[in-house]
Image (tube, rainbow, N blue to C red; front, side, top):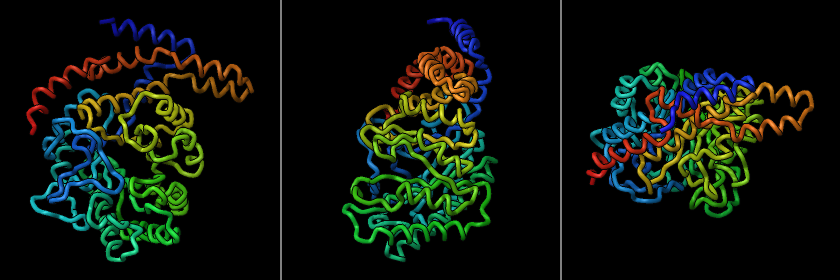
Length: 421
């Protein structure tokens, strides 16, 4: 095994010649919160007391790798195991379907008490909790939720959104950390509808009612998430990008922001290219980091060009600290804890790599019109020794350099996961 300290000193020399402060880059990357999605650990199943555990609303997991979490206690244990190998500031992101109740509690009746065990655990771990209304995998979600033409159905989901915002405030009050809530609905149509504006007017009104009824809620930020289409909803999505962006900008409230999910656009669209346009009009963005293969397949985050370009853009815009970063992927075909570690380590590594660039100098070159030098610098830093800094950082955080973490995850699989039936 190579000398990590020696490698770090070599990297410091390399970056130092371009005026990059490596220690400061590590500090910022380490302090940037990433919200860890709980649903990777149990394939988006949740723990509601219900006979029907099937997924719907375009949500699918593929694979049947053994050892998934069967209870909230097991899920928290798995999250803690993964966290050992994910360096930096972390939060945990819950869906409403991860409530813990002794009997059936429908989603329009959930209360903070149904998440008390999650809160107690988060306080003990000194981490924040984020939240998501679960507008899918429910009998009343088959024909639309917040955009439903059935007023009783729409009323049900409006109440769900209201209760989720109040639960979010409870999370913030108890943990002392702001709660970020993400609103995404699968509402749409398999074929092209004749009336395309009706569902969107109802969706707008539903969001208006949710926020109006919870004007007193504080320390909660709400992301509005769009999507191109869903499985079974291929022709029309009520909550399109244009709708969600229009709603956020029209609302003009600091707590209502855009959610940009890296898998929710056409394959040739890039979230990295959208960020400056959104930040022109909005102070904050909620970023869901995933990896689309062909489309929104929610693969484990890779250390790929788009992930790196997103983080580079945030750093160059000076908006890294104004972006709420969360991961959103689920793979049931591999060890689920390994999936968390790989995807979240790659997300953090991309942040670090973006900070290890002479961004101010490249901006200066651009302002002076020296686009040749600008291109030369951008290309040179694609091969910069980021991994040497990353290994040093991981070792100092006790998160395992290189692939050291993998052996421990594999041992946990043999000792714990393999015994789950």
